[in-house]
Amino acid sequence: MDLKNPKTILVVQIGKIGDMILTTPLFSGLRRIFPESIILSLASIVNKDIAACHKDIDEVLVFNKNILKNIPILKYTFSKIDLWIDTKDNYSRTGELLLNVFKPKVSIGFCFENKRKIFDFCLNEYKTGNHASEINISPLYYLNKPNSEINSMPTVYIPESVKNKFAYLNHNKDFIVLINVSAGDKSRYINTEVLIEFVRYVLKEISFKLIVTGLEKDMEIINFIIKNSGDEKIKFIKTENIIETSEIVRRSSIVITPDTSIVHLCSAFNIPVVAVYPDVKWNLEKFYPLSDYSEVIISDNKVSVENVNAEMLTNAFNKLFDRINSGNAESRTRVRKEDH
Image (spheres, rainbow, N blue to C red):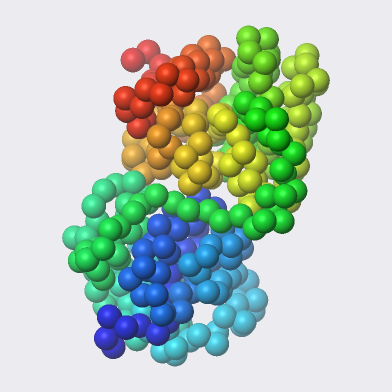
């Protein structure tokens, strides 16, 4: 097959929501290189909406762990895919299985030591950095080598209906502080009492509009924070899906969040963010915020952020607020670690 003119291109991303957000630069780059190709995304149930709304994706195939529910996507098996792209930089048995089921004409992906070669062409030498967004654009350097500009910044597209639904949020040009309570793992949750103390500080010191968001399963925590904040100005906004959450992030002035997909939504919309991470070097290196203005707080624990206190949050918030107001973008990300 001529790699210069693939009729169909499929990008595999069956991970979490954040993984899909950080794969979107690949979608945009592929569209620039192959404007006439049909670009497909093989997505997971949780991250499919990001791909479905992206302007450079023609169709989303949803992978389901329940084998019987995968029947609708099998129409693309047996060489109906010209170019298969998988940017996962560690070995995936599921990824290999899917490749063997679909049997594309040509496949590109990363090769791994002590593993037999899975893909036709390896991407290892085309990786330009260790951030997930940089890893995900490696195929563009392989395919383009590069003849046009390659951008590693994520893009998230929001339908007008969703934008209109939340248009009321900053119609007065309010300064909105958004606090995301939820995280993928309980160990990543910021302590509830710490969040209450931080909320009280923000509402006392400066007159902001303060919004809390989170998953349905965390409503008990959210209600507790609102009830104990001592101010009726703090509001919870319910969202139905990640696209609606994206619009809330887009309309925010500063976001406070644990290490989760919200960080990457901030990157997509260049929203200032205070992000809280456990002390795992590779994780921070791969998933740090890309917003022009950001403050990163690192716990002194590799598996938890429970030691992060209100003083650390307020200090990071104040630094970020001052940098926004002064226009001082002296560094993209300033990393702060307790006792360092």
